[in-house]
Image 1 (cartoon, rainbow, N blue to C red):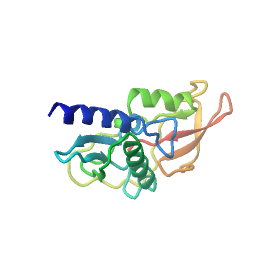
Image 2: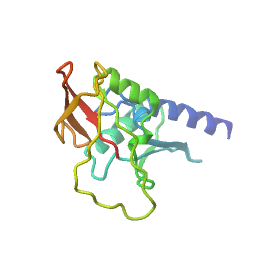
Image 3: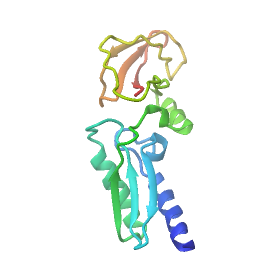
Length: 171
């Protein structure tokens, strides 16, 4: 039992270091998508990952990255499971992850809106928000495109320092 617990801790530590394929300054742990790492009685390492949104194209790379790192560390049997419940929220990005985003010129997301349990209401109206510039801190910014290189980010521009930046949308 002690060996299984030590293996689980070691496997978790290894999986936590895997970088996100779309935001490589973040690890999967920083992003909050690495849900659990356990070791089954037969020695199989099971890692649970939650996609940032349904159909996220980066999931295949995340799964492959975690599996490869674990196998490279000597774990012979590795299983990656997709965990959909509860769904990922941008609130799961760690404080360290938020710091790294800002440090790399990407505005971290605001807190996600609180919703009651049950169906999520669809609101097609635009959301007005203030997104401070991650470079100079000015609140004088504007959205230039609702979508960026990935659908979970938007393009913004600072009206003070005139620098463009990406904003990770809250979900």
